[in-house]
Length: 107
Image 1 (cartoon, rainbow, N blue to C red):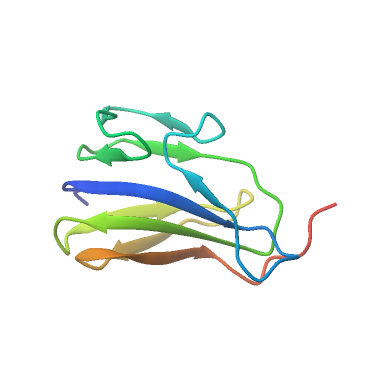
Image 2 (cartoon, rainbow, N blue to C red):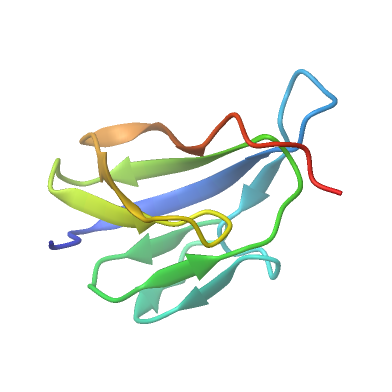
């Protein structure tokens, strides 16, 4: 799988409790990003190379990512809570993609 240019604008953490989930910018210190990325635009991180990983902890029943994919050939391997990974293909253009939903409330 290849990852072509994608500008990850924000991670949306659906923390439950309120109707509007909080948005966390991709360049926020709580989002750990490893690999080769472009951080030249504030609030955005451009992922254009294979092997980039985003890791974060959150409490909530769902998690979504807001991204702007330059092509329809953008893939992510998504793993939640150590479960099996699944492949997420982003549509070309800007939009939100659900990474996880229906999760049990954390303790």
